[in-house]
Length: 494
Image 1 (cartoon, rainbow, N blue to C red):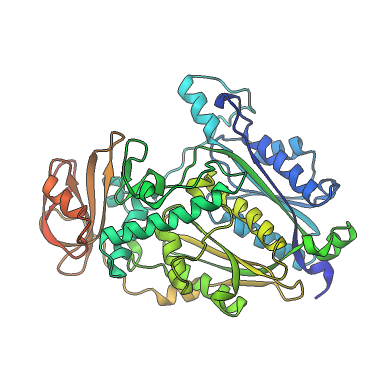
Image 2 (image 1 turned 120 degrees about the vertical axis):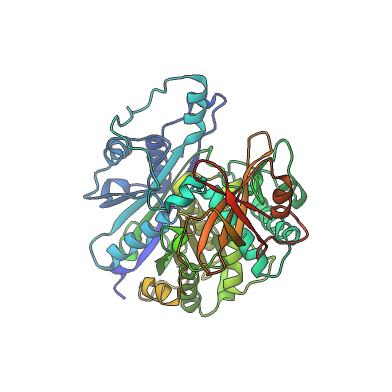
């Protein structure tokens, strides 16, 4: 392949802004600009002035009217191609891949991807009533909505990630033959591995190792959020973090004097998605889209065990647990190069750009090795894989696997809204209040005719909540009775 069309990562930059007074933190655009400068310095300097393309990961903590212009002004850059992304935890991988594709097509030679959040400062300032001296907010910013979800699940309040991912967690544990205690123990061991990597990463928000017992046990500092996840098994968005990656053609990098051992080839990857409305999925024990994008990565590497380094998206434990099983790797497989969304920190959509920085560091220290980045967005919805490292000589792989994922999807049950009859648990969760007590349970149910519905378990029904939270026996498959509840909701009793 022509060196002018071989994409490589040439520079990485990260920033963690943790001032003694949280309200004095830098705004997201300033964090992005600093991350870009650090990536430029990592590549030897002098490249930002020649930048021809910039992708900015969607920023949530501070709504800008024109974030692209603000970032470019603060960084002193003027790329001709500018793109601001949609919401999604997989978008950093998408943007790195698309930057590589533009280089492979000869449309670009020096590109950057950057992103940042300052939710730690934004939340602290809001709590204290402080007006931040940042770029003015967009007065026309529209709050996000999730009207693509079935009205039934929105009425039940199971419409945010922390309440949806447990549906997969509980379903997969049962499918894998685990009781809830065994599943929780696996999650805690896995999360302890993430924390150990974060403890060695100076850019992490939390920099100490957590023992599995500390992660698994609910406590005043580790309250239960949504069964079976306590706080230390959830993503931590209250951070001020930014990252940037410079992607160049091999020819441009060599012309800039960057040694080959500092350059990490982008080999390519795949993308696919699940239906936006999770009630339109055939089951909750795996994700067809995850499977197919990982299969492409395995094929590219010549086997899952060929990856010396890997980053499995880690908003909640079920995601890397599914990925590990798909790859056929042992439980003690190191799942991260950065530290994960709980311990490294979860700057909302931008974590995988920090993971890319960690992967570059790992591959620079392991010449010729391969690394796998796997990212996810939505409610187990959008999936991306990207393979880095190896020899800078192959063809860039870009595989749209949507048709394959769709073909594997089985029959989807009809979603119905009923208030009486018998129903069996397909999966479930229990939502907790901030004081650590249950607020309500939510059960996704299958009716005798196979249709799917959702019902509530009121807080006062402690017996049924105990069934859902029994650590010795799964509630999946348990048959109970539906009845009228209130506010148009049905209740389910074990």
